[in-house]
Image 1 (cartoon, rainbow, N blue to C red):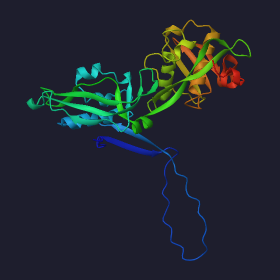
Image 2: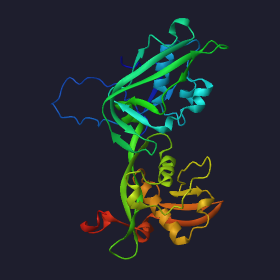
Image 3: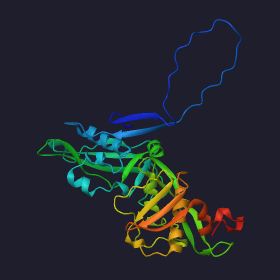
Length: 332
């Protein structure tokens, strides 16, 4: 059965500004006929806010509420974890994968699993698979049936139903996936390859990944870039970021009012040369350019100290992109 939407609160707002309602006008009773330009339809951004489980919610409502919470814009799935027991919330890894189903997961109550004693309940989630996004954010079309079980138990102290066993990752329908995720490209350098114009490393925009659209996409994108290329591309590219380089803990990336993005890195990047640092900055500028036009300069820091700073118009002098060269240099 199709999932119910009763557990999500949806707020829609106009992307370009505030919607103004025009005043009433009287109906004209004379004059000629004239064509009227229609108002262009404004695209809206829809945000879904997860809601916590209600008091004394029944097992079916717990499962449906949890599935709805998976499609929300909650950055760390904190609301979804409220539907789980303490142990299950600790062990669950929502970032492990995203399974995309054609119509979203249907839920079927299982007849076995201790249902009769009133202290346990289980449901099977089913659907038709169409894609899998793995832990590297890499998208792979898949097919076949999906069937996974979630198990619920009643807390002996509170009397509340909670999910105590569930599959790793998240699952959602295709329409929710398209609303929640966006495709972006990560830039790396082709291994042992230079551009025809000199000794510049050649940057390759050939590693598309999917990230959550409205959950700090810029920070997600940089974290994914630092983690390295996805498995299929890894054998033929390299990154200028030293192995183990990560953002400083709890860093959130936002450009300042001069469109400069400051990227604080851990101590793995502290000893890089200026030339290597500028390659790292070029990777960031090329990558961020696929999701935002508002970053004109990148400054890399480590331990509160500036490592280097590179403007957008200087990135092409540091690393050549194949798409800027003659056709024979587009592919490696």
